[in-house]
Length: 211
Image 1 (cartoon, rainbow, N blue to C red):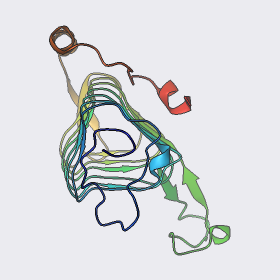
Image 2: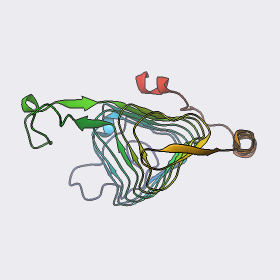
Image 3: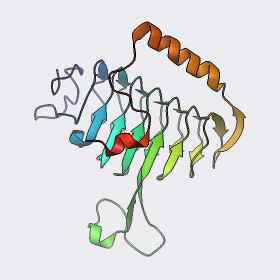
């Protein structure tokens, strides 16, 4: 048990201190041994979550990972801003979510080894709405919302928000087709009928402002 929640007992076993307490965690949250999560006090978990080995989650102002979310191996969520992975969203292997960035255009020094007074740093927000799926090795930049049900093909780069239920590919990402919204939501309903709805749902940006 970790922080009173059923997380794997070997989570963050490379740390000498006791395992951290998260802001909130639901049930059936699986975090594999080689995942790293910084600033756990700012992290909220829903239920039925899997975080694979070799995932890096950096320090954030707020990070919310909703119900039935899978974060695949070699993903990173970094940048120090705010991030929401809504219910049923997911990250394929190698995805990079960057919620913050240094400004490279005004002559400032860059990088976390530099004192903040010499840097110009922007901390933004990334939101994955429900059923948004990010393909392998995609990069998502700050201040982007991936609309409900939108999917990104492998290797895409997202620099601006994407509309719901589109299928996007490329750098920058462009829409090539539409996903079957009704079929996806019908399957969601069937899952709820069989397994029940989660106690708390994470489906909108308001989750990032809740206590």
